[in-house]
Image (cartoon, rainbow, N blue to C red; front, side, top):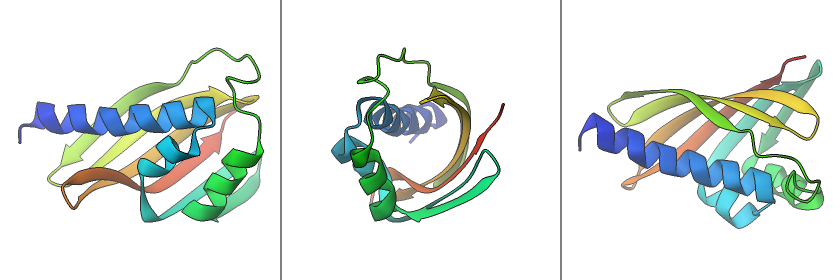
Amino acid sequence: MTYTEKISDIETVITGYFEGLFYGDIQKLGRSFATEAYLYGDMRGEAYLKNLKDYLEGVAARKSPHELGEDFKMEILSVEVTGKVAVARLHVPMLGYNYYDYLALSKINGEWKIVNKLFVHVE
C-alpha cells in the first residue's frame, strides 16, 4: 500500500469521525474507533477521561452541532504515517468550543482505527 493510499484510508476514517460528531451519529462515530480506545482532554481547565462506551453515550445524550444549526467547520490540519501507525491533528470547532484533537490511529485487522484521542479547548 502506498503512502497516498494510507492517507486516503485515514482521511476516510476521520471523515466518519467528523460526520459522527457533527450529526450525532454514534454508529458512524463508533466505527471510527478501536473498541479499547480512550479519550483524554482538557475542557476549559477540567480534565476529561472516558472509555469509548462512555464517550458514545455522552454524544448520544446531547444535541448535535447539526441540530443546533451550527456550520460544519471541522478540518484535518495534518496527518503523519509511519508503517501501521498514524497521528492526525484536527481542528474541531463545535458546541461553543474551539477544540484541537490529536488522534492516534493504528491499522487493526486491515482497517485504520482511532486508538486514542487527546483534545484541548483553546480560547
